[in-house]
View 1 (cartoon, helix red, strand yellow):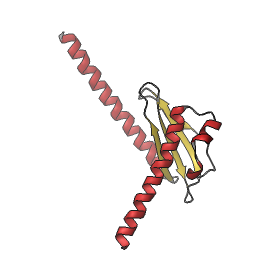
View 2: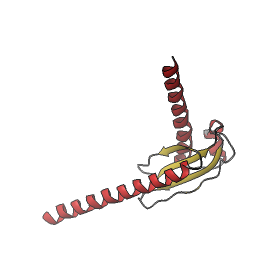
View 3: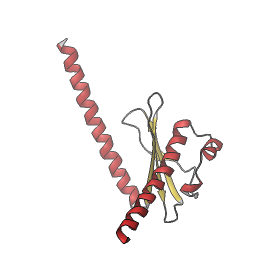
View 4: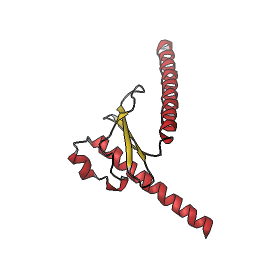
Length: 134
């Protein structure tokens, strides 16, 4: 019984260390991307399917300059180019557009999440500006 408890502790420590490593790797990557422009982040959690993270670098007009995607079940998943939407604005993204590009359900969910998260961010900034000036 003690063997199983020791094994569980070792696995838990390894999982924690690898999760921390993945988080640091993501933050370094995000910092590099922010040098290129604003970044909109979308995610779709995976319980039975792989989780998906989408990053869109956007210009001042919310036009997508570059996209990247990370999908997988392990901490070793990395970002890959995801240029399906380059040249479009965030506001042009839709589920129908994703379906026409034959994206998976998880990918579509992450793309729409990036759009909604950015809209929430802009709304929050607008409210902050109104509170400061009002």
